[in-house]
Length: 142
Image 1 (spheres, one colour):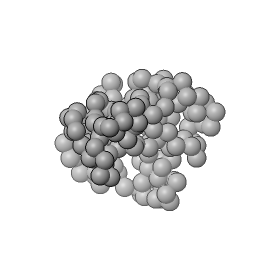
Image 2 (cartoon, rainbow, N blue to C red):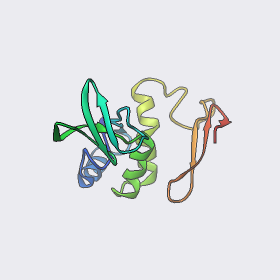
Image 3 (cartoon, rainbow, N blue to C red):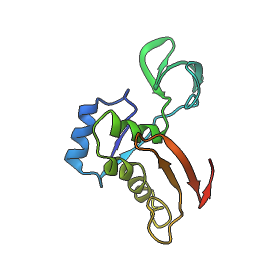
């Protein structure tokens, strides 16, 4: 399996497309290099005792602003960005964010797809991939 961080910071979109085309969507796993600032506003944070500055999805060491310290992007936003900004087909990106990681860690008997007997965790979106509803264990959360 090949792991990719598709936050728009770590890997160039052309390399993301190359990786999907080369390895196939059944061998790519999307991961997020998220730190505690994920989902929070831009600003000053800490990571492992080091000062970090977050601007958008990019987290850098405050004393060394050219050094990436992680990301402030959740996995769903990495999947969304792969589709909307990097040209990855929706089905491929969803598989790389759900089924493939579940298979990698051995929980695919319960998670990762909507097959019969599996736990029903679902994110419903509009056509622009904006979250409309989240269903966790069959219960609508929002």
